[in-house]
Length: 270
Image (cartoon, helix red, strand yellow):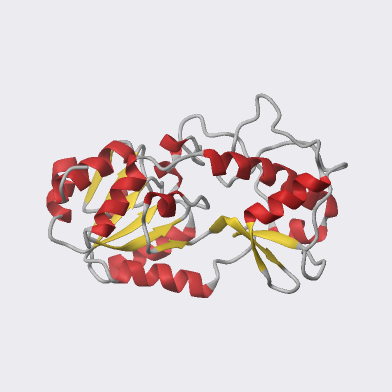
C-alpha cells in the first residue's frame, strides 16, 4: 500500500493533516493507540469557574510542558519539513499542541487545537512566551517537580494532586487569568484558525493524513473540504480510522518510517 500511496502522491501538491500519532516516536503518547494513558481533559467552563481546577490544571500543565520542551522532532516531522522545502506541500494542519513540526523546519503550520508554547491573558489578551510564565510558576512554587511514575498526556498535561498548595501566576500585565493557547473541551476552534487550516487543505491536489484516527470533529471537517472537491485522501496510521472507507489509499504503519519512505521517493533521500 505504501508504494500505491507514493504513486498517488507523486506529481501532486500535498496538503497535510497530522495528529498525535506523528509525535509518539518523539516520546509524546497518543490519545487512542495501544497503551494510551487514561485522561481527564480540562473543560473550559470548569477552568473558568473553579480556582482549584485551575491550580490542578496549571500544576500538571507546567510539568507536562517541561517534558514537551525536552523532546525532539522525529523522522516523520523531518520528512514533512523536507517535502515542504521541496515545494511539494501546501502546509500542515495539525491537531497537535506541540511545536515539533516547526522545530523540524516546517514553516506553514496551523495548530487547529492551539499550542502549548504560548499563554494568553483572558482579560487583557496579552500573549506571553511559555518560558516566561514557567519562570513565574517556579518562582511561586519552588517545590514543584515531576513525580515518579507519572505519564505525560498527549495534550501536555500530567495528572498530579497539587491543587491545594499550587499558586497560579496572574497576568504580568493586568493581573488577569492566564490560559495556555490550547483549545479545551467545550471551546470551539477559533474561526480564523480553522480558515487557515481549510485553506491549506483547499490548496492541495491530494491530502496526506498522518497519525490520527480521525475521531475529532475538526479533522473530519477539514477532510470534508477535500471530499467535496473530489481530492483524493491518503491515510498513514497505526490502526483503523473513521475515514478508511473514504480514502483512496490507507497505509497501515508508523508515521516515521512511512513518511520517510514517502520523502525518499518524492525528493532526494535524506
